[in-house]
Length: 215
Image (tube, helix red, strand yellow):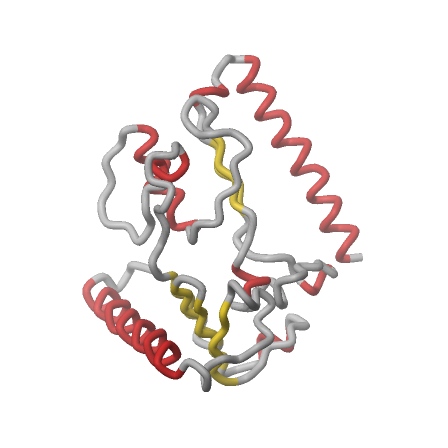
Protein backbone atom coordinates (compact mmCIF):
# COMPACT_ATOMS: atom_id res chain seq x y z
CA UNK A 1 0.00 0.00 0.00
CA UNK A 2 3.04 2.28 -0.17
CA UNK A 3 1.86 4.20 -3.24
CA UNK A 4 -1.62 4.84 -1.81
CA UNK A 5 -0.10 6.08 1.47
CA UNK A 6 2.26 8.39 -0.41
CA UNK A 7 -0.50 9.88 -2.56
CA UNK A 8 -2.63 10.36 0.56
CA UNK A 9 0.20 12.32 2.16
CA UNK A 10 0.51 14.52 -0.94
CA UNK A 11 -3.23 15.18 -0.89
CA UNK A 12 -3.17 16.50 2.67
CA UNK A 13 0.10 18.36 2.12
CA UNK A 14 -1.55 20.18 -0.79
CA UNK A 15 -4.54 21.08 1.37
CA UNK A 16 -2.44 22.47 4.23
CA UNK A 17 -0.18 24.51 1.93
CA UNK A 18 -3.34 25.94 0.40
CA UNK A 19 -4.49 27.09 3.84
CA UNK A 20 -1.18 28.92 4.41
CA UNK A 21 -1.42 30.70 1.04
CA UNK A 22 -5.04 31.67 1.73
CA UNK A 23 -4.00 33.15 5.09
CA UNK A 24 -1.21 35.19 3.49
CA UNK A 25 -3.66 36.52 0.90
CA UNK A 26 -6.26 37.36 3.54
CA UNK A 27 -3.71 39.27 5.63
CA UNK A 28 -2.23 41.02 2.55
CA UNK A 29 1.17 39.46 3.28
CA UNK A 30 1.60 37.46 0.09
CA UNK A 31 3.59 40.01 -1.93
CA UNK A 32 6.21 40.38 0.82
CA UNK A 33 6.55 36.72 1.81
CA UNK A 34 9.21 34.39 0.42
CA UNK A 35 8.10 30.79 -0.04
CA UNK A 36 10.52 27.96 -0.84
CA UNK A 37 9.15 24.55 -1.81
CA UNK A 38 11.48 21.65 -2.53
CA UNK A 39 11.88 17.92 -2.04
CA UNK A 40 15.04 16.65 -0.38
CA UNK A 41 15.23 13.74 -2.86
CA UNK A 42 13.65 12.25 -5.93
CA UNK A 43 10.77 9.79 -5.86
CA UNK A 44 11.36 6.44 -4.19
CA UNK A 45 11.10 3.11 -6.05
CA UNK A 46 9.68 1.70 -2.82
CA UNK A 47 6.42 3.58 -3.45
CA UNK A 48 6.52 3.06 -7.23
CA UNK A 49 7.66 6.57 -8.13
CA UNK A 50 8.51 7.23 -11.76
CA UNK A 51 11.37 9.74 -12.25
CA UNK A 52 11.72 9.28 -16.02
CA UNK A 53 13.72 10.36 -17.92
CA UNK A 54 16.04 10.50 -14.91
CA UNK A 55 17.66 7.35 -13.58
CA UNK A 56 16.65 5.70 -10.28
CA UNK A 57 15.48 7.78 -7.30
CA UNK A 58 15.61 8.34 -3.55
CA UNK A 59 18.66 6.91 -1.72
CA UNK A 60 20.76 7.05 -4.90
CA UNK A 61 23.05 9.74 -6.33
CA UNK A 62 21.77 9.32 -9.84
CA UNK A 63 19.85 12.33 -11.14
CA UNK A 64 16.57 10.65 -10.20
CA UNK A 65 17.66 10.86 -6.58
CA UNK A 66 19.18 14.35 -6.52
CA UNK A 67 17.57 16.48 -9.25
CA UNK A 68 14.25 17.72 -7.89
CA UNK A 69 11.74 20.54 -8.50
CA UNK A 70 12.64 23.68 -6.53
CA UNK A 71 10.10 26.51 -6.43
CA UNK A 72 10.65 29.93 -4.89
CA UNK A 73 8.01 32.65 -4.76
CA UNK A 74 8.21 36.31 -3.72
CA UNK A 75 5.59 38.16 -5.78
CA UNK A 76 6.89 41.57 -4.80
CA UNK A 77 10.42 40.84 -6.06
CA UNK A 78 10.68 37.68 -8.22
CA UNK A 79 9.42 37.18 -11.77
CA UNK A 80 6.33 34.97 -11.97
CA UNK A 81 6.09 31.70 -13.90
CA UNK A 82 9.76 31.74 -14.89
CA UNK A 83 11.65 28.47 -15.33
CA UNK A 84 15.41 28.44 -14.72
CA UNK A 85 17.90 25.63 -15.32
CA UNK A 86 20.80 27.04 -13.28
CA UNK A 87 22.65 24.58 -11.05
CA UNK A 88 21.46 25.43 -7.53
CA UNK A 89 21.02 23.56 -4.25
CA UNK A 90 18.92 23.30 -1.11
CA UNK A 91 22.00 24.79 0.58
CA UNK A 92 21.04 28.08 -1.07
CA UNK A 93 17.75 28.52 0.79
CA UNK A 94 19.34 29.82 4.00
CA UNK A 95 21.51 32.60 2.47
CA UNK A 96 18.67 33.53 0.10
CA UNK A 97 16.16 34.00 2.92
CA UNK A 98 18.70 35.93 4.99
CA UNK A 99 19.41 38.21 2.05
CA UNK A 100 15.70 38.77 1.39
CA UNK A 101 15.15 39.67 5.05
CA UNK A 102 18.22 41.91 5.20
CA UNK A 103 19.85 39.69 7.82
CA UNK A 104 23.62 39.08 7.86
CA UNK A 105 24.93 35.51 8.03
CA UNK A 106 28.27 33.78 8.47
CA UNK A 107 30.01 31.15 6.36
CA UNK A 108 27.80 28.89 4.29
CA UNK A 109 28.30 26.60 1.30
CA UNK A 110 25.10 28.00 -0.19
CA UNK A 111 24.77 31.05 -2.43
CA UNK A 112 22.31 33.94 -2.32
CA UNK A 113 19.82 33.33 -5.15
CA UNK A 114 18.07 36.72 -4.93
CA UNK A 115 20.11 38.21 -7.84
CA UNK A 116 19.17 35.19 -9.96
CA UNK A 117 15.48 35.23 -9.09
CA UNK A 118 15.00 38.97 -9.52
CA UNK A 119 16.80 38.93 -12.87
CA UNK A 120 19.89 40.95 -11.86
CA UNK A 121 22.29 38.01 -12.44
CA UNK A 122 20.69 35.43 -14.78
CA UNK A 123 23.92 33.41 -14.98
CA UNK A 124 24.28 32.85 -11.22
CA UNK A 125 24.85 29.17 -10.40
CA UNK A 126 27.12 26.80 -8.52
CA UNK A 127 30.27 25.98 -10.44
CA UNK A 128 30.44 22.59 -8.71
CA UNK A 129 28.14 20.51 -6.50
CA UNK A 130 29.36 17.46 -4.57
CA UNK A 131 27.53 14.62 -2.84
CA UNK A 132 29.22 11.96 -0.70
CA UNK A 133 27.27 9.16 1.01
CA UNK A 134 30.43 6.99 1.34
CA UNK A 135 28.77 4.13 -0.56
CA UNK A 136 28.06 6.53 -3.44
CA UNK A 137 29.58 9.86 -4.49
CA UNK A 138 28.82 12.37 -7.22
CA UNK A 139 30.45 15.52 -8.57
CA UNK A 140 28.62 17.80 -11.02
CA UNK A 141 30.44 20.55 -12.88
CA UNK A 142 28.60 22.16 -15.75
CA UNK A 143 27.29 19.41 -18.00
CA UNK A 144 29.67 16.79 -16.60
CA UNK A 145 28.99 14.37 -13.75
CA UNK A 146 31.30 11.92 -11.99
CA UNK A 147 29.32 9.12 -10.31
CA UNK A 148 30.85 6.37 -8.15
CA UNK A 149 29.53 3.44 -6.15
CA UNK A 150 31.62 1.15 -3.96
CA UNK A 151 28.96 -0.54 -1.79
CA UNK A 152 25.60 -1.71 -3.18
CA UNK A 153 24.00 -3.14 -0.03
CA UNK A 154 21.87 -0.10 0.79
CA UNK A 155 20.86 0.32 -2.85
CA UNK A 156 19.65 -3.26 -2.97
CA UNK A 157 17.63 -2.78 0.23
CA UNK A 158 15.98 0.28 -1.36
CA UNK A 159 15.14 -1.61 -4.59
CA UNK A 160 17.61 0.46 -6.61
CA UNK A 161 19.60 -0.65 -9.63
CA UNK A 162 22.97 1.00 -8.91
CA UNK A 163 26.07 0.13 -10.93
CA UNK A 164 29.32 -0.57 -9.09
CA UNK A 165 32.36 1.45 -10.16
CA UNK A 166 33.25 4.90 -11.50
CA UNK A 167 31.41 6.62 -14.34
CA UNK A 168 31.44 9.90 -16.28
CA UNK A 169 28.22 11.25 -17.78
CA UNK A 170 27.29 14.20 -20.00
CA UNK A 171 24.04 15.38 -18.41
CA UNK A 172 23.10 17.64 -21.33
CA UNK A 173 23.14 14.81 -23.85
CA UNK A 174 22.39 11.94 -21.46
CA UNK A 175 20.30 13.05 -18.44
CA UNK A 176 19.34 9.40 -17.90
CA UNK A 177 23.01 8.53 -17.20
CA UNK A 178 23.24 5.50 -19.47
CA UNK A 179 26.46 6.24 -21.45
CA UNK A 180 29.73 6.11 -19.53
CA UNK A 181 32.24 8.49 -21.16
CA UNK A 182 35.23 8.13 -18.82
CA UNK A 183 37.39 6.46 -21.51
CA UNK A 184 36.40 9.06 -24.13
CA UNK A 185 37.14 12.07 -21.88
CA UNK A 186 39.85 10.88 -19.44
CA UNK A 187 40.99 14.44 -18.66
CA UNK A 188 37.49 15.45 -17.56
CA UNK A 189 37.16 12.24 -15.55
CA UNK A 190 40.42 12.96 -13.68
CA UNK A 191 39.48 16.62 -13.19
CA UNK A 192 36.26 15.72 -11.37
CA UNK A 193 38.04 13.07 -9.31
CA UNK A 194 40.59 15.70 -8.26
CA UNK A 195 37.79 18.09 -7.27
CA UNK A 196 36.31 15.40 -5.04
CA UNK A 197 39.68 14.61 -3.43
CA UNK A 198 40.26 18.30 -2.62
CA UNK A 199 36.74 18.60 -1.21
CA UNK A 200 37.35 15.55 1.03
CA UNK A 201 40.54 17.13 2.32
CA UNK A 202 38.67 20.35 3.22
CA UNK A 203 35.84 18.35 4.80
CA UNK A 204 38.26 16.40 7.01
CA UNK A 205 39.96 19.65 8.03
CA UNK A 206 36.60 21.10 9.07
CA UNK A 207 35.82 17.98 11.06
CA UNK A 208 39.09 18.28 12.97
CA UNK A 209 38.52 21.98 13.70
CA UNK A 210 34.79 21.67 14.40
CA UNK A 211 34.15 18.08 15.55
CA UNK A 212 30.47 18.78 16.35
CA UNK A 213 29.76 20.34 12.96
CA UNK A 214 27.90 18.07 10.58
CA UNK A 215 28.11 18.46 6.81
